[in-house]
Image 1 (cartoon, rainbow, N blue to C red):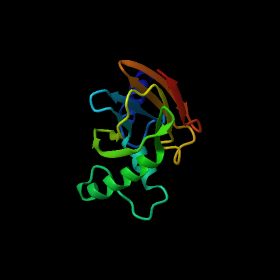
Image 2 (cartoon, one colour):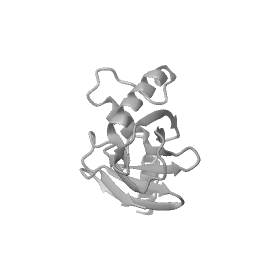
Image 3 (cartoon, rainbow, N blue to C red):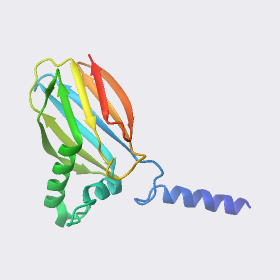
Length: 166
């Protein structure tokens, strides 16, 4: 019985690190205002397999992370996907977002965006629907950082809006 328990623990430990198995669908998006550049620097982090599946869903051409031959196509696909699923409004003005790029880690991907310039924002509104096209249990943790003050909220599908006054 003890051996079976150890084998089960070993199996669960090993499978918890594989790309195919994780019981939660969660990501994070941080909107950090850079006072010097007067822009919001946006960084997103998602499991690599979830993001790959979400980007490919409904597309005729499949692109893959961790394969250099898809680097350009993945950049374009992520740009389109991220700009469609992340919106930012400051003081009633919808801000244009620019795609900067992405970075792969072991089992996750970071996506980087930057807003157009805005002077001294105080009322921030976000709309984040990343991976909502794939999972109806997706949870996104949103962080707003402005002048050293950090405010966070958990958004669970289908909720996508986070508003805050600084």
